[in-house]
Image 1 (cartoon, rainbow, N blue to C red):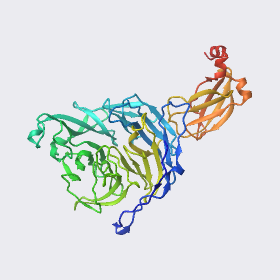
Image 2 (tube, one colour):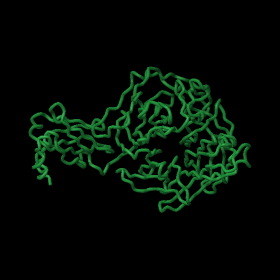
Image 3 (cartoon, rainbow, N blue to C red):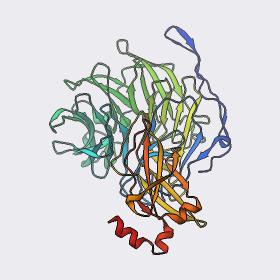
Image 4 (cartoon, rainbow, N blue to C red):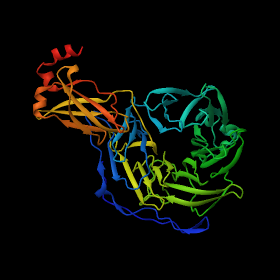
Length: 515
């Protein structure tokens, strides 16, 4: 992707009292984007349609960990089928792991869980998938009691239970509820469901029992009304639940034992007084309780398709942190981050507080795809995905995360010998492997007679070794073996034949020997 010329400018929010100290939060450092952009390479050992990735601000002062994305074409008009990928990237934008998924099937919320597994949600099949650190499917979760999971959020709890969201569609006579309402409208309610490892439902909560349809920010005369649109769940420090509902403009605290609402922040039924915030959050995502007791969320700023912040005043997206006083019911804005100029993401997005104090922001339906921001506001890192098959169809990720991760795949490394300008060039990678220091490169004419001809330090996803002419003429078979950071050999690629030998039909006796 070509990054336009421009600067990320500094911005300040007014000074405020935070824990008794006056603090002015500086939002961004001045960084000339075009001078720092770094486009990811194309790979021989990855699919030709592997997503284009641009690191527009190289990593400096980032938290530890890898980047987790689940990409798809954000095409509301269904012009082209989506090609989703699950991705784990490093700070250079190179893949550590990828999985190309079936076309037309958006996947979301790809992330590690506290128990060491990976989860992602499948919108088409209404299922949740759990992978282990070898990227093997170990569990498939389907909603119970006749429901289908909506898959906006998946949480694996310390006891092994899984908490997720559900859409519940009912026919409602809206003419009796709102002027102009239809007598047979379809209304979508929100259900929270928790199941244990055996598949038993241990908790279920339904918005119908607690939140009136009229609390929505949606048009009540429509034939289909998604009145709550839950999009995140967090387990609070006291074990109760924090639920973000986009179409209520609300974060709701729910008693995890009784299901009773404990408080409502934002929206029509707001119980809090907002302080130091000229525009409380709207159409928000990803509400999380922080270790300091504050609430962090991604504030989309509105939810209208096509709104441009340059021509629509007041429409902007941000990460926002609030100090909550749950006794006196006040919500004080203590930190926010806005791009300069403002960017507006009408859908998706998240904010994650990292262990070093940085904030990782997934910008949802707009560019950049993600930013990592220091507490003072300077950007430590920024990355953007390329466009889809048409310029007006962006490649997006519902959320973006940074987490520590170690993977050891069961699949072997991929080795692809290529003929280039008369030379034999080996391209190889081990998709999903971490903690690999180098590769041992072997050559042979029969599989039992391999010799080490090179050692290649691991520098990225894919390595390239040019075989010296003397060796290229002498050998037809090649193999690579990863060596981990402790010096132990891992699973090898298996023997692969040079194209020279295939073209000269020298492979027949070799293959017979290999068999």
